[in-house]
Length: 245
Ligand SMILES: Nc1nc2c(c(=O)[nH]1)N[C@H]1C(S)=C(S)[C@@H](COP(=O)(O)O)O[C@H]1N2
Ligand SMILES: [Mo]
Image (cartoon, rainbow, N blue to C red; front, top):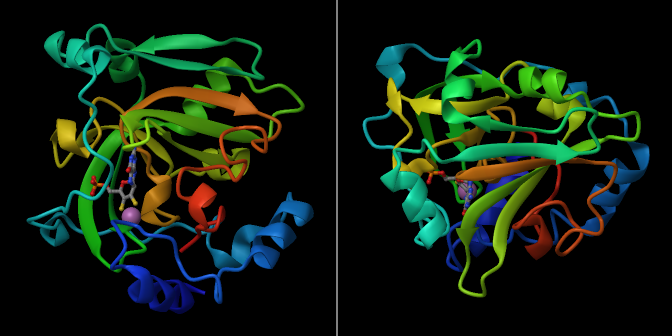
């Protein structure tokens, strides 16, 4: 599976950062199978397992930048100007207790740290230390309702057509102990270009799941009515929704 993804992406990497991967390997039938069979035991392909962790000495000196442009709208500029004091992470949707978390609030919660590898489908990997709040902690606070199946992450960046970057995880992936809402990278607040003030880190899945500049998490029963209906910005352009490593 992993080899297939990287071979396919190498063939199409001329298009753009994280250009759609080849349909020969990643056709619709596999996605459909996963969609129908859920909840499915992902154990074989990673979700229940732990992503490899590394020593500090393995941290990459240069962590590439690879995304849509850093948000440049007035709202984001305002967040930056306030040193993110005016930022709120909204968590809502099919939950009993929707909430808006300030950065201060997130920083006072229990922080988890991990040194893990980020694998981009374009064929590069980089290792960094990340710390922040486990997404499972946030979910425990907002309490997903019985129909809830996915967490959808809405980001603050837009592409040239003003389409918003978004991603989704099922609640099992979202509750994985290594799935973090990262606030810090390599011991410092996440740099603006890498997704400040809050970015998702999902070391068990390919890089496009690790959404930068997250502003809202919506808990939903289905994502088929959102945007292109495939659960993510790149998924809407042909990537597999399930991106386990
Ligand atoms: N909001 C947002 N998150 C994103 C992306 C993006 O374009 N926008 N690109 C994804 C992809 S494909 C990769 S490889 C990583 C790159 O993260 P980095 O720029 O910190 O290396 O961010 C992921 N998260
Ligand atoms: Mo990527």
